[in-house]
Amino acid sequence: MGQHAILSASASKRWMNCTPSALLEKQFADEESIYAAEGTAAHALAEHKLKRFLKKRSKRPVSDYDCDEMEECTDDYVSFAMEQIEKAKQSCSDPVVMIEQRLDFSRWVPEGFGTGDLVIVADDTLYIVDLKYGKGIAVSAEWNPQMLLYSLGALELFDSLYDIEKVNMTIHQPRLENVSNFEITVHDLMEWAEQELMPKAEMAAKGEGEFAVGDWCRFCKAKNTCRARAEEYLRLARMEFKPPELLSEEEIAEVLKVADELAKWSADVYAYAQDEAITHGRVWNGFKLVEGRSNRKYVNEEEVADAAKAAGYEDIYKKSLIGITEMEKLMGKKDFQKILGSLVYKPQGKITLVPESDKRPPIQTETAEADFKEDE
Image 1 (cartoon, rainbow, N blue to C red):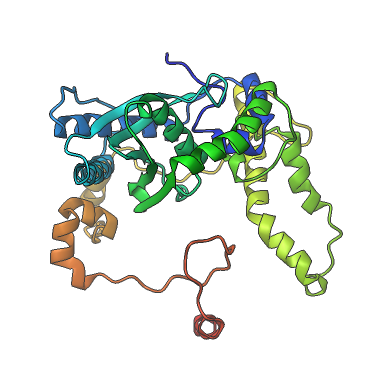
Image 2 (image 1 turned 180 degrees about the vertical axis):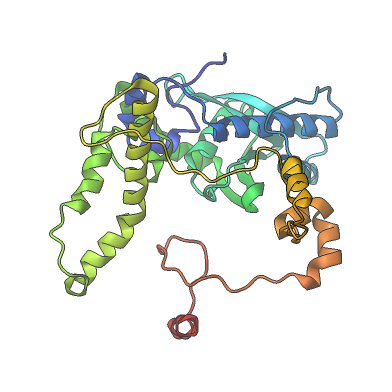
């Protein structure tokens, strides 16, 4: 089993914003989710494919998560990675290319280290490429602490050998078709490391500072029972609500900002309580375990069909066209577009209210009102 850094790069956004969380998490056992296992499998496959492209020895990994989507997504990543390598060759005839490279940034973060998916050194420019297989949310590379830490670790390896002036960081997220890039000078990176990273890392290592709630709570081991998180979302529940038409604009805006996170928090607590009841026999006051509803299923479809036909029933099958996603996987993107491109359309999405931070462009109020009336 490999080492696990307490102040890891992957969790840096959390421990930099909520410094006591790193030590708090030590109370909880490491349990790999299916999403993390799926991501690990995708990284292993991507590493193998990239090594083969670079004519390096590699044995293809086998995983329970192997599927057409993973094949396609890792192919996309490898194609992108090769583009970055070729880009580096434009300014450097023989760039250094490293795959799944251990990066030590303990100079700034106590016992800090991580693994860079792809590191390229091309004279004055350092390239860091990170594959993210998740499809939950699009991740931005702009001032991304994980990418900045990888950059610091890579500079530790090569800064004395090369006159590196800038770092180019890219997050490649194929399942969301998200490619996010951010470039920073080494001077600005070091300034961030000295002024912001080191003080927070020191606090996090000691378990000092204040607990803070935010989107970084999503993968925290303590999220289900964290008191600070509970107090933050229960604060909204303690509001003295009036009929909606009497809420002030400020109150409505406050509700909108936290409603989604409030729903996620309550779902997390419910999932934790249910798991405790099922796996550990925990009894929660006012609740009980029951058998959920289920749908009837055929024991054997062939036997069912034979029995129905023997009884004189013929019209027992439904034939329908496979879905668009399945059809695209069947044909491949290029053939799908060539054969069916003109026969597929994307209707206008449902008008939705989202935070200003959402990357989708806003629509005009008049347009939204007209579309809403058409739906009524």
